[in-house]
Image (cartoon, rainbow, N blue to C red; front, side, top):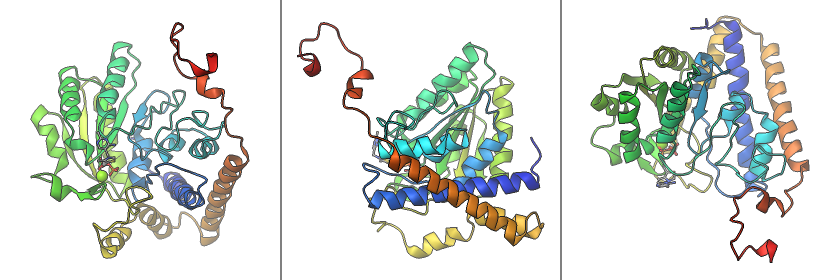
Length: 332
Ligand SMILES: Cc1ncc(C[n+]2csc(CCOP(=O)(O)OP(=O)(O)O)c2C)c(N)n1
Ligand SMILES: [Mg+2]
């Protein structure tokens, strides 16, 4: 694994702060109705992404996830201004404003969405890994899903095929404790989601998903295994989301005290503590980072605010048309 140095910690701090503040901004502009539809935020789960990025080879590895998908593409190199513009439904967005919150996508940067159907991306991720194996690209696909999605049948089909064909894929369950308002305890006989891998003899295990170092180490082992042709791994990241399932969640299923307990092991605070304990940066230098983060978030908001909405005609540019179909309104 690439060594975890002072620079790594400073980079983790800046990136995770940016992801957190970017999403805080989304929550604020959602209330102003600048962003509409559903909005599922990632606050609290950032270490799962930071650690994974450390272990990935971004020149060839890919990522696919569910609808909690705004900061992953940014981590993989997509311009955050374009991500925010997509959420605003603006033409400058990653999908010309036609995907919105749940469907951020960048083939160029290896980010394959953004999927709203729970568990649907699990077999798609296995399929992407199949393509990598078939075309001998050397790439590995990181396939993310939630604890709720882990109970879908699609997981079992994908696990079976991935093990049978030794596909270069890492399956990652982000266990944040809840599927909408339903806790893991209420949905399954056993709460160790990672054990689902045992039925397929897939290497599997739990990981402290609040600590980017633990995530990076587990991910590196899994990615190395996939890359050398030894097939998939299943990791259960034990993590937590601070905000509701989506913006319309009254959160009656948990207590404020529970959320506060998890804030004590916040991934950003953990990284900041290491920075301070080792004098990797002075207070003034940390303030400079915080200001840079704030400026970039402001820049994204300004860009999205000032970008135009798509022309109505764009609706017809991006759909398949059957030439002889008689009821195409814009052709009538
Ligand atoms: C097939 C399907 N069933 C139900 C839903 C409604 N739904 C949306 S999110 C969600 C909960 C999923 O929870 P989890 O997989 O733990 O992911 P998290 O939201 O915690 O990241 C449900 C049931 C859906 N989108 N798709
Ligand atoms: Mg969940």
